[in-house]
Image (tube, rainbow, N blue to C red):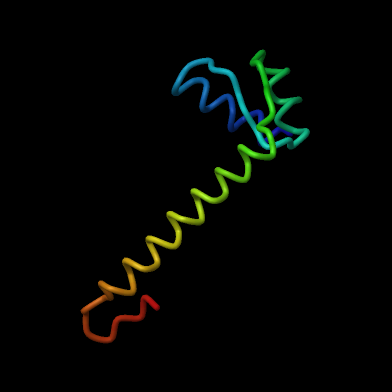
Amino acid sequence: MLVAEKFISSLVSKYGKHTIYTDGGTWYDQACNTIGLKHYLHSSIEKSLMERVNQYLKDRTESFDDYYPCRQQECNLF
């Protein structure tokens, strides 16, 4: 919990206080209560949608790398 609290505190100092939405980790709720932020949980539909978007971006990045590989001599970025 201490790590989550420190991380959220660093975000608050950089971006200001906002409502926190998380995936259900118990440490986030405790950390937000300590800092004084409102904490809400994402629904399972929202979590699935976010996971799909992340997977889509990962797939697109990988396919870009397949079409534009490293052209340096003895490149070992595989």
